[in-house]
Image 1 (cartoon, rainbow, N blue to C red):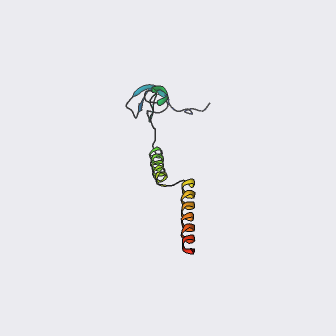
Image 2 (spheres, rainbow, N blue to C red; image 1 turned 120 degrees about the vertical axis):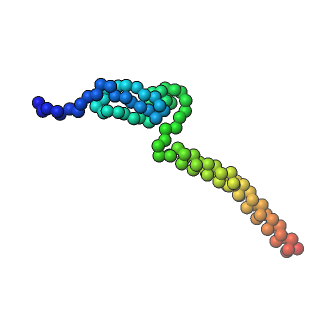
Image 3 (spheres, rainbow, N blue to C red; image 1 turned 90 degrees about the vertical axis):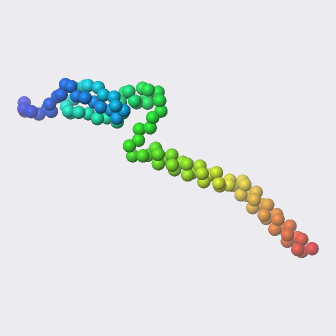
Length: 100
């Protein structure tokens, strides 16, 4: 067999989470840093938490805020049709009065 084929195994490696939690395990790496662990993962804690490194959630929320703001100012098709019919009827009345 070839010698030094496998990486060296470290029995006591500290895993550090972004939340501050740390624990010891075995690995081929010296130190391990993770963004989320069992102490702060939403599945285990039951609390909603957004794990977003590329600002995707914030960008989506900003986009949805813009959409709801423009939707509040817009009119629906039924309202537009009713307004159009109303102006059409008014112009018809004006034309019949002018004809008299």
